[in-house]
Amino acid sequence: MSRTGADLALLLLGGFRSLADAAIGELSARGFDDVRPVHDFAMRAIAAGADNASELGRRLSVTKQSAAKTIAVLQERGYVAVEADPRDARRKRLLVTPLGFEVMRVGEEIFNDLRGRWAQQIGAAELERMEQHLRALVGAQPIRFDRPGGSAVTEGV
Amino acid sequence: MSRTGADLALLLLGGFRSLADAAIGELSARGFDDVRPVHDFAMRAIAAGADNASELGRRLSVTKQSAAKTIAVLQERGYVAVEADPRDARRKRLLVTPLGFEVMRVGEEIFNDLRGRWAQQIGAAELERMEQHLRALVGAQPIRFDRPGGSAVTEGV
DNA sequence: TGAAGAAAGACAGCCAGGGTGTCTATATTT
DNA sequence: AAATATAGACACCCTGGCTGTCTTTCTTCA
Image (cartoon, rainbow over all chains, first blue to last red):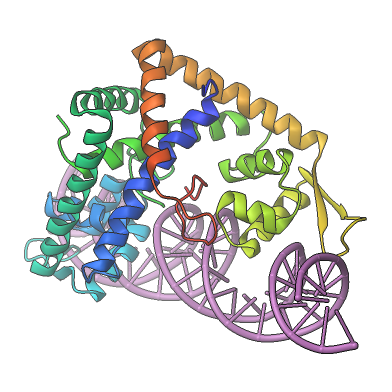
């Protein structure tokens, strides 16, 4: 059917949208009405060790200024705490708060539900296969992590 | 490997990004440095019959105001022309200009190249398979076309 | 050891692509 | 003819990016 590359791009985007929209809808329904995918990704990166704005920017492939903005809203909403770094006065250490971890936990649950539904529809083996291919294709793409504009997997939707 | 839904979402987004970024880069290299994926999609919708702002909005699942904005930049850059509709004075008829068609042609070429590269990497049959699954999954998603916020396949990245 | 360079982050301002609400003009329906 | 529906314009808001400039604080090296 789809024999054009543009169709393929739309399919991929559509897939992402389906998952992300459903997840956001679910999160709102469960009381987290001020979270967007980008916030979840940022918190995961912070929890995984990106504990300052510059590092977060690098991991998300955005500028440190953009990262700082994201951090600001995360902090304002209580998902992330900021404290001085005792070892380097230039840095401010980032911490995911319990509330933040709660959002991440719920988000994971929801995403897994959705993935489970997809697995039911096309079969778990097929889904695995698709994921493997995607990983190979996305991974094969040259990604510049050093500068903004590099197309790493961030959010933006 | 990836057993979580969040990973799947990221893979899909990454795939879209890979294609879209590469395509935009190529387009710039070929002299169209003021085009974004959303413009291409909008032109396709216009060429396919969405010849007024409200209809374009419906097809792209955005408000007519947003559609009007997109049309304005497309018009300003010479990719789309606007003229009065003789049959309905409320409407303004949209036309894709030759320059617009040229962008679409080049865009298609580029996307097809990229898809070809993917086909080489994982095999044409596998790519077809993946596309079929995606179509099934995205198609199965309930999409509300009547109002913005419905997660149809638009752009936004 | 002191000066140069690198890094973190703040601040100001810009842009695109979305959204809302309100308004006018024009059709359409009853 | 009146009521209703539709197209589009206008003004304004939000988010998530960007750039450039600046200060503060390390780090490194001559």
